[in-house]
Length: 383
Image (cartoon, rainbow, N blue to C red; front, top):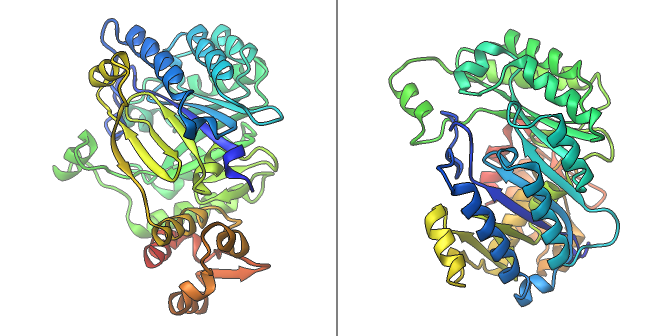
């Protein structure tokens, strides 16, 4: 695969109506004037990036508006960013996948219709739970009924690909309550579903509440029971697991994220966004004021950059690729890095194969059904 011809464009919108207590992402409630400043800076950043040789070498196949909550921006402004991207950057042949993350309670039917008319063809809806008590604990601004309503409105607006997220391993959650959420979610007949285990990140209000013993997280056995319930329930649908946390009807996989997992090329726009360009990973400053000042001065917004050597890039590509159920191609890795996977990992690979955590078939290495719940352990041995 020519990765340069399948690049991804990511636009980070660092605003939320209210910061969720579990979130460690670069986001905050906007202050007066922030949205206007942000939009002007990103338009300028696009123009500056478009003349970089490492960007001109790419053809974009996907666009992803993430955050934060992109749907806090007026739909016409999101459409304007997309129009500007199409004007400035080279796009691969065929229809690009254009995703917008939205949260229930931040967009209405008219806004959804406007996004669809602008060319957005995929929505990722931050549902997280369909249980109102869990939503309140998570600090979400919507109810389960509002989440179901926005999913219906998105379909009515003409979005054929509507994905939504759910979280498990929540405080006080049980396998039974998770099963109830799954049943409600699958009754909505999703074509794409993402299931994420809650991670309590250092420095968040959730971490402080956990330290004070305000609630109990499910134990390992309960988490494994939730995972098993997910596999059993989804196994009765048309959804297929294509990545550790993601399920889709055939042909509805998220192409943008697949490019990440293949360790492909991508350009990140906005504060805190990360780019992978010309063999180098670059992170933009996360502070909105600093970001706007740098863009206005015509200076690079990246405050960190990293260029991995050949072996480190090879290892990272193996580990990221194993997130996908299709795994990694031994021949593709050899052509890309000049390294033979079987020889490079020989003793470690033999042990993981003997433990039935990995499988090798038709020139591809992938996690087994036994290895999928233990993916972090397997990948730690390959880093």
